[in-house]
Image (tube, rainbow, N blue to C red; front, top):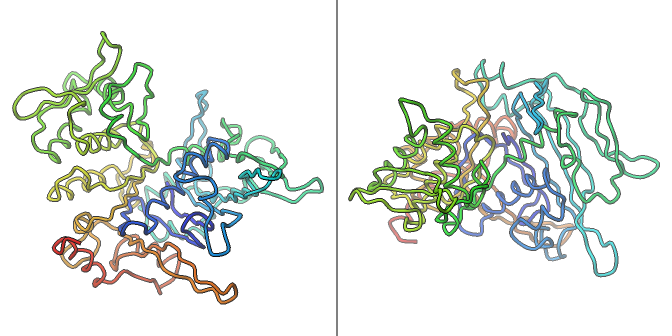
Length: 465
């Protein structure tokens, strides 16, 4: 679970920081930086499992465009820091499982543009660190007021020494992986083209591996209707991919793995019910393997009783089906970033969709959490006033904890004689967990979104703006 992110020098962010609850909705106009935040999360996830060159190429924009642009040109460094709550158990690809003694970790990484020869530039890792968050320093846990069972099962604070540091040695800067069950190790940091996390592929260093797994499971859903329509090949991945190309295969797997005598369709029946509630007209949902073509296929039956393949279903229906599939998958864990949930859903049914989303998020305040359940988190972004109205009560307070507004504001820098634009996030004025969390970490003088600003966005529904 991503509990805090700090960004400096990436796209529209300068000295940006925000603490995050398990469910967060971010509202704002186009070009406010909502998607840039998701891009930052995606880049961090990529850096945990890919070399730097591959990681930056998968983010929107050319590598140079990821570095913040001001009147003086592009910045030379991007600094990220994240704080995470990791699952207390971790299993590596060889089946080795470890129970962790510490589950709150802060990770920092600095990317730097370097000219390696005339006309050739590379992005490299300049420094990297992972340190334990101590109990008495854990503002996030205090702000969210978790239940006693959540504290017992998920919040563990045994470690005091760093897991990873970047140190200055006689031979130059060095990444030092500190002892964590096994002896530590070090490697040069002068020309690093990958993060240290990228190299931690098993439980030899269990806490760093758990952090890597946590970041690997930060997913930005960029569902492609063209790919969602197609049958999935026999060797498609088990977990839903970011573009949704393997949706038919995932649905078939879920039906097989969760089927019982009483429920032969397994969780497919739950997905079918939720989909029908959001998109009336859908009667049944099925997914199966076609022996003739050796492909997985999706079939929907409508009110007229006729079956339709995914090839003729609307874009919005397929997007919602993919999201419901992911959220009903018992193997699902980690953070999901989802853009514009309103697409394909009738405005009157958005509250139902948001209720579905809230049901699968881990709520630290609940007493009945299964200690073996994976931690699940959801970040939404939208520019729709209809989504905003679905998140608020009659008094324009947040009905579902966290609602943040994204906008772009100016920084006046007298020393540099310039004015710079940057993205900021502000909470809607409410008594939510997100407000308590921000008060805990930034003090009582929060910069809130006023009820007047909320009403202005809601009024655009009537004005057609």
